[in-house]
Amino acid sequence: MVCRSCDRPRSTAASPWMVKPVSETTDQSEASSCNRWFWSWLVGRTTVWFLFTLLTFRNAPLDLVEWLSWGHHFAWGYPKHPPLPAWLAEAAHRATGDIWGVYLLSYLLIALRYGVHGDSRWSFYGRDWR
Image (cartoon, rainbow, N blue to C red):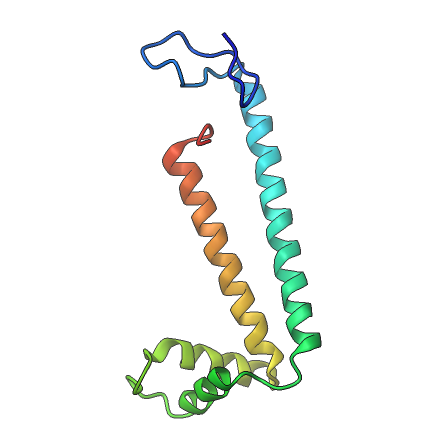
């Protein structure tokens, strides 16, 4: 019996929907290929969105300006938001001297979130998580 979604032989064990690995080598090369595609997509996505934002936003959004003004004071809390975004925005602005550093930091944090989520999903569910 063959699984329709991935063309692999199905296991005849207690649960018929579980996929039986063809061989360890195939699984490792498939996982490595998936890993390469994932990280390539992540780097490409982050680069494209950063450049798009850098080239199309002439002025910073008002929330970002608000965060930068709060970041100057390093208070433990602000009227509407927790302090960490303001601190990070101000640190990125001081490190680069321009608003593009805040944009880059935001897209790098999004990429980090995708990377952590992808790695945790693979470690929690194993290689055959689909």
